[in-house]
Amino acid sequence: MYQKPFSSLSYESNSIKQIILSHLNRISVYIFQSQSSSKDKDENYIYEDKREILCRAFDFLIAALLPHFDDEMKKNFKDFEEKLKKLEDEVFKRCVNNLAYEKSKGSSDKYSFIKWKKFLIEHNIASFNKSNGDYEYYIEKKYRLHLENFQNLNFLLERKDYLEGVAFGETKDDDELAEGDNEGDEE
Image (tube, rainbow, N blue to C red; front, side):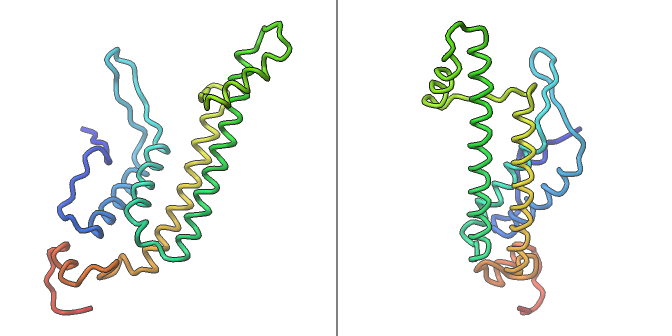
């Protein structure tokens, strides 16, 4: 039976290191799984976009590792946030224009499009129309930005020797308890 990899996270340890490593493992497994679906009450298939699920998983890693960012990762993260904001603004404008066009189509008022556009912007209203490609454009760009940031997070883990031994202020005793490994006093 299929189990969603991020639906019920249960970690044997409450060590931040174990949580991060377990989450990285879940991301790795999920990336290579085929598309899944579920049925709603009317027996219609519902497909979750794997890219959106992975973006949320990457966001979890960001939140967990944010207090441990070094100067390089802080710069990378700021660039990531700026690119994501620019993408969201661009897609919002596209959606507003498409929606204003749809609402003003057939109107005898030659300023109808401008009025609709102004109204939608003032009220921060926009919707994705999956048939015209707005959603696909947005989610693919967002996913690529998150993948780039995920790579930067992995470089951070490498710089902090996170995948080796003790990291992020954990003591050797914490590391041994998390791994259930009491091998000597190596550091």
